[in-house]
Length: 256
Image (cartoon, rainbow, N blue to C red; front, side, top):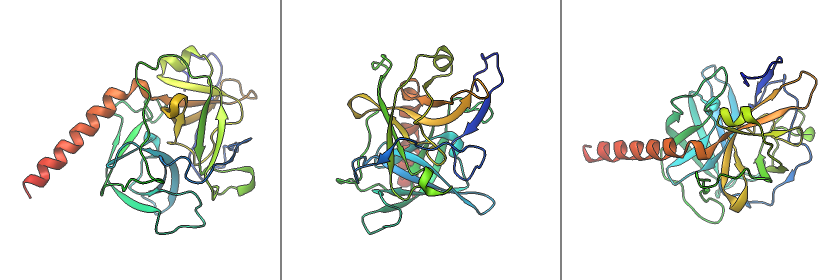
């Protein structure tokens, strides 16, 4: 939430199955099949027995990145997926060994909304499954045109996830509050919708600049602002988390 705003804020997490938020990827289109091989669908198994969904991106053969508010009891990751109605042997299904939400994640304000998921087995890379490159601290200029993608709700999906991967172009805006909260923001539609949380904000040179986080309205009847956790501000944490997790795994294996 923008704590610096003087007006009331309507703040909504972009997860699935929440009727409060009705926006979706408006003005988007179906992605060319497997043109975004870094995309994954994160199936979340909740403590109450229900399933919810988020997006995510492949960091390496061992790790997937998503939003910290996409935490669940267990996870099933779909890699190499395009059409949920046509699952085949080329779609990899991998469970999660351990989740690593950012240590400074705040589940009220949704600041630091980034999480890494350690896979129980290594992803098999190929033309339909590839890792994404992350923007670094050197990528300081605000990207002017970016793309978000996901299987979140659309107008045609009647409250359900889109069966096919959708994508749309967005333009980031200059916003001081976003900078303070280590986020990028876009204003109005098109934008991500329910079920798109955790997916990557992809900009120049195909790099992931952000993680889809949340929507809020600085003015009750005004256009929504969409927030994306700013990856360049989390590179240090990402690298140290991956390194520590792999070191522990290797140490554990040596003593088996």
